[in-house]
Length: 180
Image (cartoon, rainbow, N blue to C red):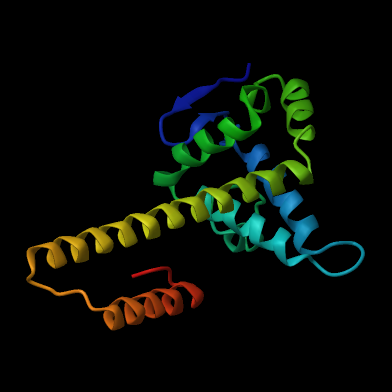
């Protein structure tokens, strides 16, 4: 009969060495390729950004997948496989990892292009929110520092300095590096 072995860094592995996470990652790859190489027209920039963010979040290079002749995830570092599996399971659900092939295939099939794009869009939105929070915190810290120095009389705040600082912050914000 078929023997299943649990391998900590690979997930559950069958006798042929195939990890149950491989078909799930393959689904992400298939949808990614459909976005990057559409049957009609050109790829959309925002969709490309979404799939790039997904692969970055998985900490897996899709180019490694494309260069892999075995069509499996042997290109994924052993140390990363547990994290990749956990992230995929959080997105796809446990059913996509079922040992029952029909259940797993059906669960993976329910994950469509819109789901992949929504996943990427959420990651992009989270990154933007984190960057905005960091910029706001840095600006608040600067304002508090300047206010404390001015209150102490150690750094007299002049109107010209305030205007120059405000202009500098606006220039830094518009060049994509954020305030600071």
